[in-house]
Amino acid sequence: MQRFTLFELNEFIRRVVSLNFSEPVWVQCEIFQVNVSRGHFYIQLVQKDGEQDQVLARADAVLWQRQHQALRRQLGGALDEVLREGLEVLMQVRVAFDERFGLQYHIEQIDPAFSIGKLEIRRREAVRQLGEEGLLQMNGAIPLPPVIQRIAVLSSPEAAGLQDFLDQLRQNPYGYRFLASLFPTAVQGPRVEPEMLERLRAIDARRDAFDCVVLLRGGGSRLDLAAFDQLELCRSIAHCPLPFFTGIGHEIDETVADLVAHTSLKTPTAVAEYLIDHNARFESEVVQAGSRIGQTALFQIRNQQLPLLEQQLQSAIRLRLQREAQHLDLLAAQCELLDPQRALDRGYAYITRDGKGINSILQIGKDEQVRIHLKDGAADSTIQKIIPKP
Image (cartoon, rainbow, N blue to C red):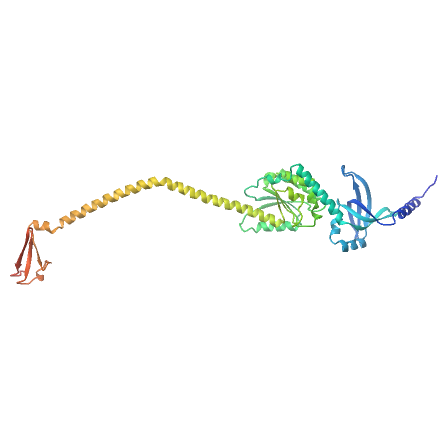
């Protein structure tokens, strides 16, 4: 029986590997775990059963610091987006076997387009399944409350969009007061789905304390947003008992979370502006309704007062006519008392000269012609003597 020492066996395996894998090969796999030490990326790769999610194969890979720098110059920020746990990748590796450290894949190239394509396939499948389950419009059918004030916020405390959202609410020109409660959660990476599902359960338990839920994130690449395409997360958003708003911060791409949300807006600031405008519209409607109610009430009151006013006017006219009639009677009596004819009838007379009345001896002289008026006529006379009053 042939025997090998461990070193001899490993050395034999190394030669076999070197002989059969003299050139780099492309391998499709999933990144299970990433650890960084001194600039080197130590990555655990797996292949899973698509139906039962069981691990079928596992291997260790390393991206040396020098190669990482070269790929960074080549791929830019896409490199960091691809080196993410839970992401399916296509990478070119050199198969290496070391007598002490065993089998290891040395990463030389990574294809970001493959990962993006896989994510898009998964996204479309999620949309299809949610559509079949009738969940794409479920949350959108929830009526918005007239006033939105109590807001459950799903976001990372460090997210740039969170502060933009809060500042916009505080600085609203109407002086509205908003109560925003933060439910901190990861907004990128493999922890997004489990953490956000947990926070949604917490919000559901306190649903009566909030008017809506807002999901905020300060932008990111398409790969960054892939977490919001996950089926279970989007199912929970659709089933949320409160209106769900998204402000993930991407101007072009639309996530599945955006599709199932009640209202999807491009940025956290846009979400804040929407809530402010919603409340302002309600306030305006209340003011207009109050004005209409006031006008209607005034019209009804005036209609009710018209018969009374008509009766009061008729009474006032009668009283005024009676008073004026009495006044006319009084004036007539006074005129009758002052009528000169009445004095003449009692034996009095009055004197005129040239048609003008004389009431003083100073107005006449001796031998002047005057006319004496009596009750039944007049007589001309000549002044013979003036007798002053003693």
